[in-house]
Image 1 (cartoon, rainbow, N blue to C red):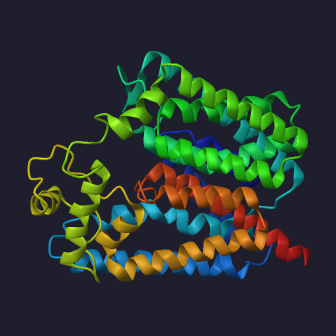
Image 2 (image 1 turned 90 degrees about the horizontal axis):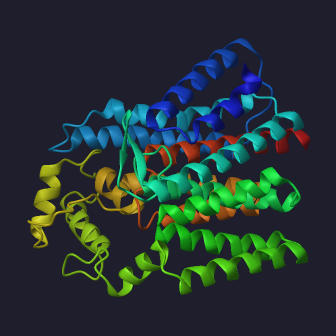
Length: 389
């Protein structure tokens, strides 16, 4: 069973939150039992151990900040359970999973299969406008979101996977499965209609191409970029319309601010000013948001959202203390990438962290699942690197 864990975790990636929770719970139980019954397979890399400690400290602080908040009323247990797989699975992985070339081959094949399935689902969603709402299928919304609840959740998972799939394609360009996986991710990004994710994915492709591709692969990448850019710029399509509406149309322009996201930031900044050090606790209530938006003159605004900014959201919920702990944890995760000298992992993290300025990526359960998979891979790779020394 243990040797199937990497493939099972990847199988859970395209599933909705409920499916991912089931997969993560099964893997957590199996790996915990295996860790208790069998001797360690490898030693921890120090950075993996420190990352676990940092995240545990953050969760303890988030719990305390929520209990101290005057209007907390939140179910902190639900919050902690949502973060447990992210904390525990990267710590357990190097103890029980023996990586081999066979395991790596099966895992990469699973990743390619997921990418192809995403492309097929996204194309059909863009064409017919269907999506799942719980257990029912609804129509009329032609933005791809896979099996997730929102297109932006889908888009930010894609920018985690995209540089890895693109790099693996470079290693075997003649593979039909790998080529189909690249096309699947591109179709998914296109039909998700997330402008930020599309720009980030383009930047990731440029970095990967410039640093890792040979001359022939670079030519293929450049031709593909020119074709996609030309199609976007000179045909009537949803991506072009969305970009034009961003600069000169009604898209996200419903307040006195240049963009609605700036209104989200301004309102949530009011919450930061109320409790800048300790924070307001997790799961900000609608009444708190109503008061915050009223302070900036938007009492009647129809989109009283949370911050749409990962770092600001951590500040709002857990204060400056919580934000600093999260930044320290992220610094350790990035140091792991430096230790592995992995350009695709660096591009994935950079895309996610940059995208975090326009979306609550770490607060999104399905994106957090993707981050968990990246951290599990880093944990295993660092364990192998340490064993080989």
